[in-house]
Length: 83
Image 1 (cartoon, rainbow, N blue to C red):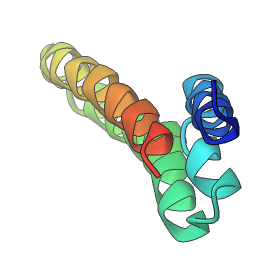
Image 2 (cartoon, helix red, strand yellow):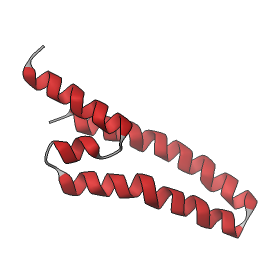
Image 3 (tube, rainbow, N blue to C red):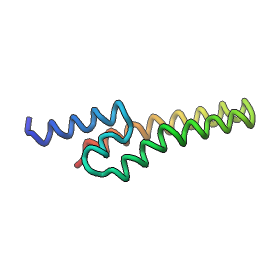
Image 4 (cartoon, rainbow, N blue to C red):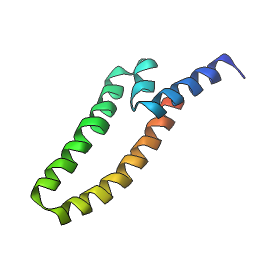
């Protein structure tokens, strides 16, 4: 494989383990930090505040948020792989 392909694989693996790390390592720090903040702070905050409101609302928000998180995580990996 080419050197560029190894770099892409490394960035994708970095984003697999820490959301936004691949973007930060490839030089797109602003996007990487936004991804990181959204995934590790905004989503849990939304879950927490929905739990404060009602258990039923929490289950709805958690279900929708979980689907969003998985899709967002996949997008993050693909985005880190693309140069």
